[in-house]
Image (cartoon, rainbow, N blue to C red; front, side, top):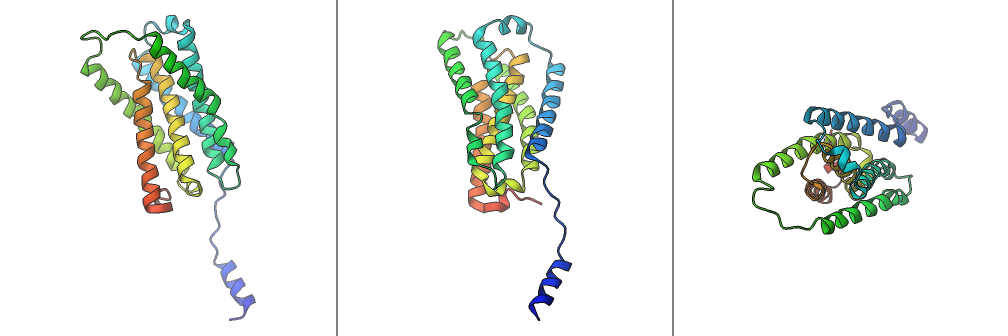
Length: 213
């Protein structure tokens, strides 16, 4: 077969590829979905009675603001670094607010370090918090990875970890509005644990771990 005939045969049988939308558009859509899911959950659960009082506390307000901005910036960074032509420097976008959030968590732990009395935190409260966490973060994680199942294969580890950080931060922000128990550590542990599982699958099975048809 002549080279010109081969090229014509290949071009005639090529299936059109649907171009991905802008990472800004996809990040905005996921953030909108997250706000709807977390907003509905907050309405169903009801805002904690002392929420406005807590918002007047600098440490609580800074924690809420830092977790919200970390979630937004991590979402943007996730969709940016999922594309091979975008710089890895986008991974630094949520770093300042993440450091502020983590530092504020440490400060709150030191400030409120008191012995836990018997019955203050029951198994029922912890179980309820974990169940709410799973029901909240799991749909957001699945939606995120569904939107990234093709593009994330170029940089699986950074994308997976950054996406999990986005889900963790926004989930922590929402749960702080209606849950009386501070579950930030539990939230981070759960989401980062899921992230490590996805990362391990990506290491073992390569791109097929992410490019699921």
